[in-house]
Image 1: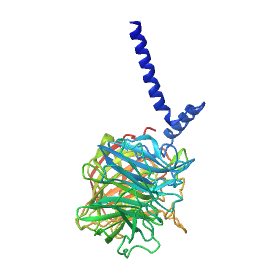
Image 2 (image 1 turned 90 degrees about the horizontal axis):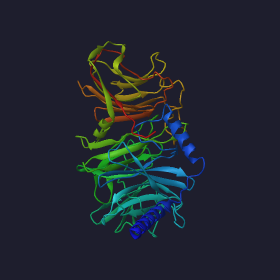
Image 3 (image 1 turned 30 degrees about the vertical axis):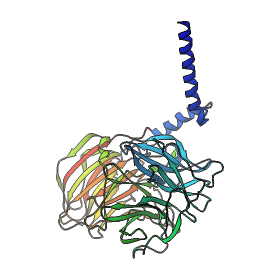
Image 4 (image 1 turned 90 degrees about the vertical axis):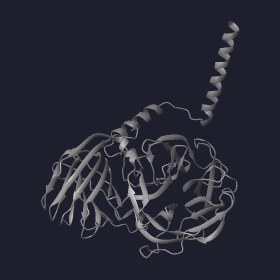
Length: 499
């Protein structure tokens, strides 16, 4: 018996030692004061009145930029990386989720390691290679070109960078994919350049301009950065940004040598906050998009993603349908509903049952002859703070009026990366109602983030900074003619972030 006990104790010690060695590989030691500091940060985040509760938000620190990158669906899991800055420079932080809203932070990140040519990791994408490995393409800072890393690890925690990096030079924000027997890479810029190769870890050949031509509504100074290129039905879609104006997309044809766009649409407008889009294809066949919602918070952290959007090709094959994912329903609780009612010209009616600042609403309005009407959110009882969401049938626009949104009077600019950068206080997106068409709005509030989906074909995002505790009311209004509120449903949305 004594020998057996000795054997079991020895075995347990060996097991503990092995685990301890595995755990020690990260060389992170908790120092005196670290726990209390962490608790203080969490308390500050929980007490932050404008920190989003169910949008994906940086754990701590400032994400500037905070581009989503490397989105890929693998073995039932959504993987996403985001760009952030640490002491060693630009990193990609790894997250994963099974439902698009609850995320797990991974302890690893993609970064510069000693002896590697890149001095930081900048924007790029992830894709599945011919050999089954997941490949990340990224711009390697200070290399002048684009690099790759690859992984066969089930959880995508372990990555290898080839000695051939950078594989595309010169290069900027890459998007890389595998098709047929060829690896393709778009290198962003003005103009974007196409590279091809027979392997993902070897130097690629520069082919030439990726675009056959640009579109009439695109200015010559607009670059194509953060590109994401994919097929929807029988058309190809390029989602990207110009640094001056934010997210946008092209739809057209791809012959394996050049992309020929047929249409171009914005996803961000002056005064807006939608930047650096990134997509993936999941096991349901859905093309899902995130973008960085630029915020100006000055508290513990700054860095927020848009809620995921599902993209489909519209019937005209020249534009996209844009819808929220069904997974948002998992956050719903305490459902609310209003009975239908009519609103007279010049009238604004506060909803009796629906209110909140972390909220989903599903509203249907028959506009009748009205030319300008909509929904006001984040309304204080005295009306000093309110944010009108406006349908303007004369201008054919969907608008968010930020002028009365906050007593703090935040400085809304046309866009964060343009000089000169004029103040813009009303964001306006194109939106045309067909004759006798009703307005179907899905409106999402998250403390300081407002996202509006209109009739499944337009979406507008804005950051709002209410200061009054009672700025939680919702109103339906019309300015020039009567309207009918046919449906108003609402749900509280439970926080998906831990703090």
